[in-house]
Amino acid sequence: MELDPRSLGRTGLKLTPLGFGGTGLGNFYRPVAEAEAGATVAAAFAGGIRYFDTAPLYGHGLSEHRLGGALRAAGAVPIVLSTKVGWRLSPARGADPEAGHFIDVPPFRRTLDYSYDGVLRSFEDSLQRLGRDRVDILLLHDCDRRNQGDQYPARFAEAMKGAYPALERLRAEGAVGAIGCGLNEWQACEDFARAGDFDCFLLAGRYTLLDQASLDSFLPLCIERGIGIILGGPYNSGILATGAVAGAFYDYAPAGSDILARARRIEVLCRAHDVPLKAAALQFPLLHPAVASVIPGVRSPAEVEENLRLMRQAIPSAFWRALREQGLLRPDAPIA
Image (cartoon, rainbow, N blue to C red; front, side, top):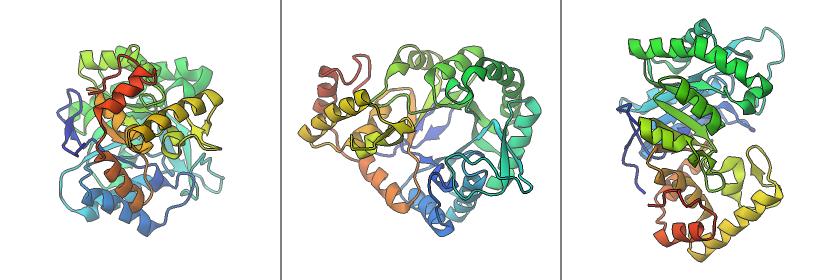
């Protein structure tokens, strides 16, 4: 599979099928040195990657700062850039910022804000960190049950009343090229798709070798409406990269016995067909016509170069058929 750009739904944007997930630039789980962060973006650029994603949440603005600087250093070659709104940053003023999985973050507090004014302020702050006057894609971040729990219905209503009109305004003014949501649940993506005129969704970890439930209704709806999909988390936060080893993670938690067993069955077929598990995980989502790009998070030039090799790994059609025949892929999952 080569890096020929693909259309993102009806947006008119063209994304390289392998994109750059900016979580690692925000010191996700472990710090990344400034020089290594710049070298990582440079390696992606040199390898032909032209779609880059980030967010204010990633390192409390650190990922946007680093990505913006590194892209300016890369030159004037056109790219597609996405960032997010929903988490707004403000000075911590001595307080200990809640950083979650991000390490050594700048001294800012994060506040969930799906209001009209909050989105506009967050977007302006992002432009300053990125050093840009517009972005190609702006995504509403983390408004799903996974992140909001029982508050999801209220947060959804708040987002549709406040954030969505702000996104529409920015799109109409040309400050962004396309609007969407970056979420961890296909069900929440579908809620937004049915409630508003969204161009695309960044769906994290919910159309993978281990999870194809989004085929129930969401992905068919995207095909029907010309909505483009960017697939984040193709390794399901670890297990499809490491295999079913002791301590393997699935969906940001230790994998359960059923997931471990399923991953082992996939690994058996990978060995039988001489296909690296990571290559299969990276390429599978791109077989669906709604998916324009897959964006694994990276934190080093070596990871970028590995992903480029995996993307170009030849995978025989017999491997995909074997997965389907053994019930490891749904019958309605595209395999060609």
